[in-house]
Image (cartoon, rainbow, N blue to C red; front, side, top):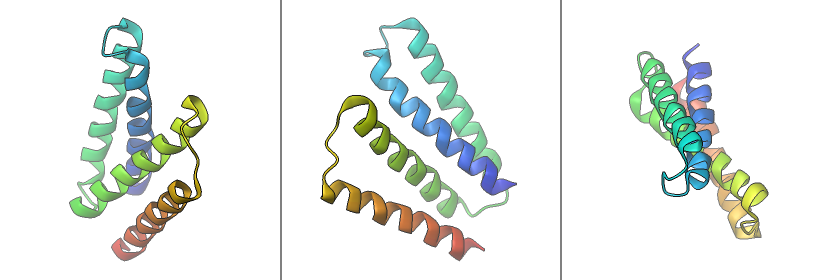
Length: 105
């Protein structure tokens, strides 16, 4: 169950990171509220997950999910470059997330 909570926390992290772009410096009320709600949900779910998962592993996986998802959505939504080097770096982050999951048992 903790891994499910952690995965959901990572997905909400993607949501708030992308949401930051839409707030336009926190000047747009609705995107700002949604971004803050996603931030709170993400941190609460992370907090629940670390009750049973090692904090270092959970934090690294949480930020990894957020990083990979945000970079991919940046490419899709904002036409950020999808170079071979960027994709290779994403692959290494994914490998690290999987490695930490395997190492945590």
